[in-house]
Image (tube, rainbow, N blue to C red):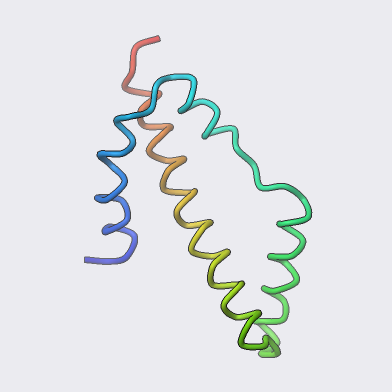
Length: 85
């Protein structure tokens, strides 16, 4: 099983807890500019191969969190599509 499939199967039951309002708010969630800027800076350094050990750990944490949020947002969208208004 891939990591994405595992995360998907883990979060599917959780997504059933969303009501329409919480699902909408999650779908609308955006990471703020300072965090995006930091992620971009780390991504650039990663591509150059110049990350420190601490920066690599930070970058990997951002990537993992972004994956988690993306799957949650997908689940929220699916919940909104299947839940009557």
